Length: 232
Image 1 (cartoon, rainbow, N blue to C red):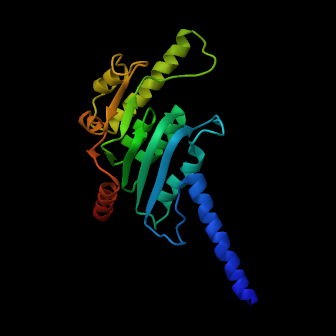
Image 2 (image 1 turned 135 degrees about the vertical axis):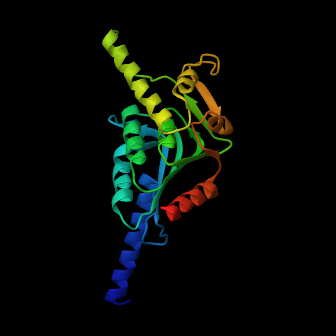
Image 3 (image 1 turned 90 degrees about the vertical axis):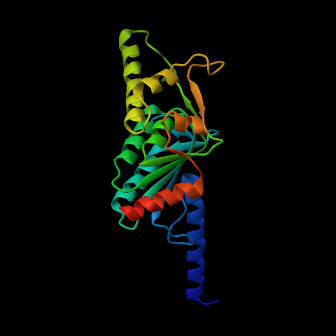
């Protein structure tokens, strides 16, 4: 094997390792190797990690990893649209809202698909796209804002939590067909979850509530995104 062949072999090995790292860390396919697409695919899975680092045994989506990917959708002329795949238990409210705001303000077509679950702050993320799908077996849980750690029992603290909850409700109402009053009612329901406050919505129920547009899967989500890309 000559020097050039050795260099090519090393480059191929490095590319394969880089692709494995992308899939492992971000769930992203490495474009330019064995897979090319004009659609950006982003996974939001496990817990959405924000300002605080979660334990190592938690499956997390780090919002600082997704920000450059979303910027790339807007800036890269080769990318024509965005498909967001969600299977999340929720997580950091501010990080989730930050990502949702970024998705909702992209100028290119966007579609989301909820598989398994899109709970808590995952609901605004699913609603943030131009069109949304949910698998028939998937669920979404609406519940009031929670906090952990030291809580100062003052009116100021409770007022801030109320305002934060209003931010979430307003975002969902603005980016879906669900009415604000209905979202609030589902969020504060006390007879749907045995040991908690809130509501669990199964696939079609999420559509009937107006939070998600349609029950469907991967092929439907990609077809809808392709249609919107063609129209744009």
